[in-house]
Amino acid sequence: MSRCQQVVRPLVRSLRQGPSSTAIYQSPSIAIRSLSSTASRKDEGSTTQQQGADATTGGEELPSALLSAELGSRRRRAALATTGEVPFEQLPYQCFQEARKVLNQDRQEKLAKIVAETEKIKRLEAADASTMRGGEPFKQKRLRSLRAHVEELKILADINDPLVKRRFEDGMGDMSKPIYRYLANRRWRAMDYKIMTQRITQFNIIPDILPKFDPTMDVKMSFRGCQTQPGSLLSSRITEVPPTLRMQVFDRGERLLSVVVMDADVPDLDTDSFTRRCHFLAANIPWDPTKNLLSLRQVGSPQIGGDLAVPWLPPFAQKGSPYHRLTVFVMEQTPGEGPIDVAKLKEIYDGPGREKFGLKSFRDKFGLGPVGFNMFRSEWDEHTAAVMERHGIPGADIEFKRQRIVTLKTPRAAKGWEAKRQKPKYRGLWKYSKRIA
Amino acid sequence: MSLSLNLRGLASRLLSRPTATATSTTQPLSSFSARCTAISPITPAVAPAAFSTTSMSASGYGGGAKTAKAKGGKKKGGQERDPKMINMLKHLSILSPRRIPPPLRMARNRHLRHWTIHRAWLLFRRREREQRERTLMRQYQSMSAACEALRLTDGPGTRDQGYLYRVAMEKKGVYGHNGVPIEYARPLTDTPARSPWNHDWKP
Image (cartoon, rainbow over all chains, first blue to last red):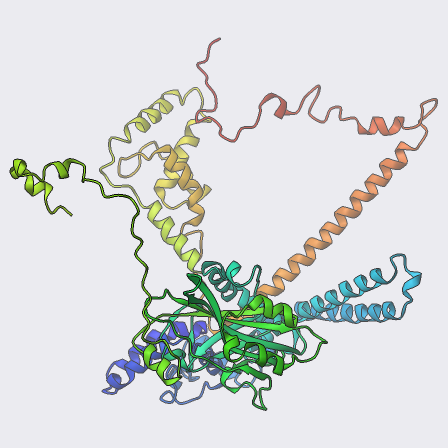
């Protein structure tokens, strides 16, 4: 949310709730909007583009009365009167224009450097490796570092542009360009990545499921349109339908992804322990940085692509079993190896193959690398039995209980101050020795 | 922004004046300041400095050297602060609301312009710095080359090679006539004494 809105919001609220009788009708909508987490970015986009929009249409829009050119300070009125149609980068502020000159000069230098480096790369590619001292490995290493340098220069050329910043903040950034990918990565690393790594360690995903794992792509999960916090306890009625993943990769290029949803805490009575179960498995989903939304329900459809190997099984936790960690792993398939054989996947993991699913063996069998992660938890609740019945899952009537371990020691007479004073001889002390908590 | 706000709150809480109940703790300090006044004719450089810290924190929120006037040992409320507290406040005063400006509140376009100017300023400073570093490095290397040339020259008359270099490297007279660096005589300490010099000391 922009600063402008933060400042004006209480004003708007008081204006709305003040004299009019519609305040009763409007105030709940305001409260809901302020609590919702997804709407803020939409609002941000709308502040600059729909400034003239009617106040009554949107929930958080600024009323047009506050934005009109007749209101505000003398300075603002003068500025609006004289610079109504001037685009942002040509606004006649002297310091701003001088700053733009400095930044432009730097940008030109960076662009010249990019051209020079690209020429260098071309020359090096054409050169014969046998003439170099380090031979072919040296050439490849040099090429790699030069390419990385060019990528860095591309980012540096654009990072000081206010329009780039504005477009990114509005969510209008073109993710096929390195600068927007860089900014998105920086924003993700700032908070969401930290939360995700915290969850991974808190819930012992490392080392229970994978020995080593560091997410490199952003995966957000929403059930029925509501985004969930990673690791939250969700009702089984909510998780009956497959979630939608909002995925963002930060490195360029096309790739194929696999998505696995697995339950890491299935009680296993035979070994008196826990095993894993596969709840969803899809492979060969084509993905690139410009793509954003993956509905697990629509995997396999022509507009999304990919192959569904194991359909969604609603997560369920039988009564008495501790909470189940349901983990969503996004795995990247080895580039250049082509799609995975789905028939083989179905043969291994569908039906009875769901049980005792091993992510490590899946990774090793098909040459995958885990890149993205999200998770939620599920417990027995009042809807679980109905969900299990609807999907034909047996075992809703099973309740797990801790087995009581009977002591092998022989019973001994009670000892101690209280035990001694249980006798009628100490009747006067019974209030201290009997029925004490 | 929230961090600075927190610091502002913390600083204003810490910098608020103590309540009037803390009279017993102020006893030793008042005796200390009385001793200071007693010896002030002997060491005029010491006593005003001690008073200046008190008056600075008393006159409010680390106004800096401008308010560092000797107002006498007493504050307005007639109370003294613990010297440790004074020391802490001196360092905390950079967190005071006077030193930390309030967060800038700007509309979006104006914030973007501000950001642009800020980035340009950072870029300009970086360029200047790198230019300066380059110059310094060039000068240093040219000096080093000159020294090397001097080392390889044969001296005047019958002097051997490198005589000129040895003479040039001597530091005679740098610390004054027959002097030594002052660090050899007065070791630097992290925790200097509260009274820097004991004038009454007799061997």
